[in-house]
Image 1 (tube, rainbow, N blue to C red):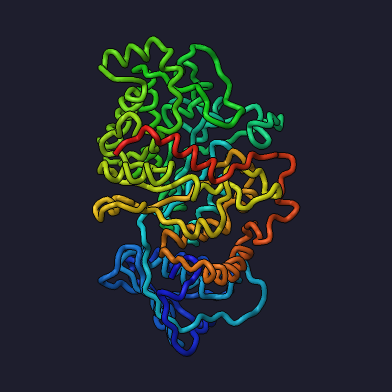
Image 2: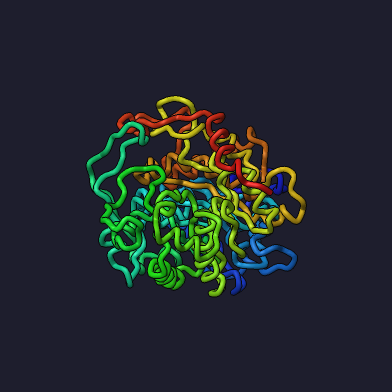
Length: 534
């Protein structure tokens, strides 16, 4: 069963299972977390207590299934969810809720109704182990309660990774006890652009916010209860102007900077001194205390080398280390942090620009610049998380026309996202095995509220979830099922994009964009990757 129930893994039988006040719920202790979630989710909407006991809904351990697979069997007499592990049981519970009336997704009762599910047998499991969504909370801060809501939305779509982009030029969102100025200074900026950079419009309003360490513990625990892993990103050595504004000694200029108030790639990057390396090692010490995730992202993307090429200390580093150029200097610097993570039993994740100076050993590559980078990384023996910006960046506009709010990039349509396949053509079976999965990305330069985040994410995120869970490719069938799924999104309060286009209040005439054609985007991709070799 995909995130929007599809017929390919489902067989039906006559009859229905009807939920009543006498319906009970029982679970093997190993699967109890899924049973608790199901009761906590259904009881407010249905009014049914679902007490413990045999004879109603049962979660049962079963052999022969993968850790995220499940088998759901409903008959007129009972509901059985079988799984090998709690994650599989949880996804079976999500599917059971999908089979109910969409009102089951509400937070309270809306009236009396008969709650029932059809008699079916479903054996289901994911296509990929990494099914993620990146949310950029650095450009525009997402308050904690809104982030918790998004974790629920990811889990409802059987997505299991939240990649949290916590730091950038425009804001530092994570409390670090040893360096309090990172949030005292770095967590807010004087103003923000209105629309694309070329229009030179600004809102004149301070913007800020950050997560305390207890906030992060709460977020991580809440996600874990829903089988979502939070992968933190501290972007290095570029995208660091907010940190440099807080601690100017981290930069190359020796002068004070403010937290950046423009979008785009900034020239200010970290210096390569021992003191700066020690500073961010301390930061990562605290990150590892907060995030138990196997993976930690250290960035490595969009690092202009101008300041290093002009910096005497950087040029001296290059000379004393026998490096070729500033690209290799970046690899040397990043290798310190990747080795640090590996030594502590973690797996470093970094963006594909790190290929330009040589990939550090043990790095999992976040491939965002298209099939070329995905294929090269896999052929070089590195695991890959695929996130191509022309197909999975959900800040790109959804249709032609100025009616789209802050239209940037080329059109990333619902059908294109549904057709997305993470694996490039031409890979060997071994190389294909290095594709861990994929993630969509919600970069928030132009997404300044939770309402707009909903609009940009949905329904495209539902299409993405289906692509990475099951690989269903029948788009017309998807649209039929989406019509029902939108009623679930309505019940959840998700302000998705209507098929006919935005409502008047979803438009942003105050923030003009910068639309591009797909040919322009493909040209940029070709230029970015022209020097890469297999």
